Length: 169
Ligand code: ADP
Image 1 (cartoon, rainbow, N blue to C red):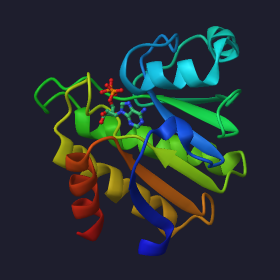
Image 2 (cartoon, rainbow, N blue to C red):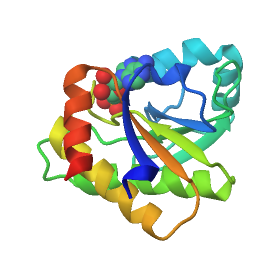
Image 3 (tube, helix red, strand yellow):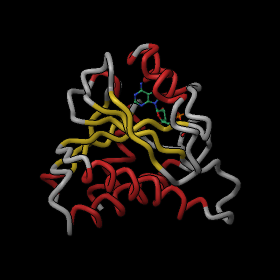
């Protein structure tokens, strides 16, 4: 289903989609990497809403408004910290994609963009993460009408290549 999944190299905070996904930490109170960029771009109202959510467990996802972002909503999901791969990291990362897609569907959202969850500060190997992302998204889309399209957002040329290769199989 190549027409429903695409790879772009961009700053996820600039995308005009119904919802962007944040690679958050369990506190949901902001951090570095894409999380910091999203909080800066969305403005302080985001932190105020996040404070009401009571955090989020690894592999789970919660939704907020997008505030000053072009995106209407933000889904905050917490990827696993990489500890070598024998501690359930693959399943937890898969769960991030599954829960985020389910939440988008439940809110009637048609377009969603994901960063490469866990592959920055959390240290998940990039190729392995890309394969899990593509597999979980393809699996979800194959039996759900929503979301209609999924954008995989790379933040470097290398990541774009890795994600495109995973998508091309
Ligand atoms: P994690 O803690 O889940 O590893 P990071 O934010 O450190 O999260 O990294 C996740 C991915 O997001 C990395 O590939 C990083 O390069 C990328 N990234 C960082 N900032 C942005 C941004 N503004 N837009 C899109 N991707 C970003």
